[in-house]
Image (cartoon, rainbow over all chains, first blue to last red; front, side):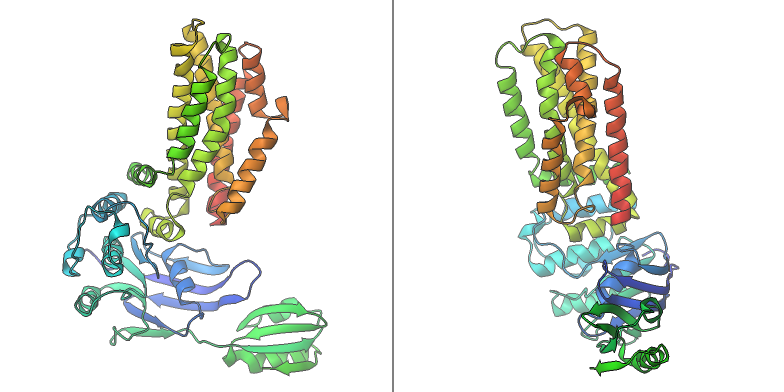
Length: 243
Length: 210
């Protein structure tokens, strides 16, 4: 499977979509082995994986990554007109990679020459995994066990052994991997109107600061709410509610 | 890059959405040249005016051929958004250059007025410039610059429709004016230059927006 020397490094990475709330805030992470991302729905796992893979650019922070990354998204599209063999051949040429036996090892059954739209969900997922395993450095996999039968799921665990990979995994397939938990939940603090919005926004753990009527609403990570409250009081705000 | 262009082109042709602009182009070309279309260069003005929106339409088809998720995989595989957007632009330009060549050859075969080699190459240059303009407009408003296909269609349609009444104020107007008066104009090269600049701008804006 080639050399596995690649390392993905995220340094103080934050991400928000437009002017929406912060999805990730000041996250630093180094992926140098098999790393599993856990966390409740909506805690930014898919966003983090897209940033690590190079699909998304972080709002702030730095990402360094090796040249050859394989990526499997959360949901592989189901309406692809191209056949699996044609798709994998094209991806191999784009990557200048040799063909691999991943599809066979995952137990793909069905027509490689039929349009991928005709494949079952599990077989389409195996094609998605096969294109990702063409990468030689790092794998970034978003819930890769989706749709796989137990035998293929076990084989995927075996394929990941010894590789550098960042994987979101709800089901605990990779018990021995390094685990990174993206803390879920948030605390909403309503303050009296404050002029130093930028000071609040820059505080660690703050995901969004918005003016709502006569109040300023601050959404903050649970573990940082005490520090944010203290800073708000220091700025002369009065606290209207915390929930 | 060649492998990426081959993949994106194969995806476009497999998807068959390219058939709609192609058939509209062929149908209207057939109508335009079903009888005497006028003097050689004048005859090219109708097909040039037609190729502009067809090229914009074709560019949108190419830019949105892959759905969002598959495009993400391609971006990771190819090593970044700029390479993928440049390859997609190249595919759109190549397809539209074929249409430009077809549009330049068609009246040579069907128009009763004889064409000189010089007139043919002027027509080819005019259609090439107009095709590049159309591709640039299409890509500037397609994904990833605008995420919604509805907004893309509305924006491209608006720009294309507004271009015609502006006359010589636009590069398309330069071409149509020169051909309509049956004369060769250096502004044909200017149109091609603006078209190339628009395509390049679309790739840069798309890479920043993605």
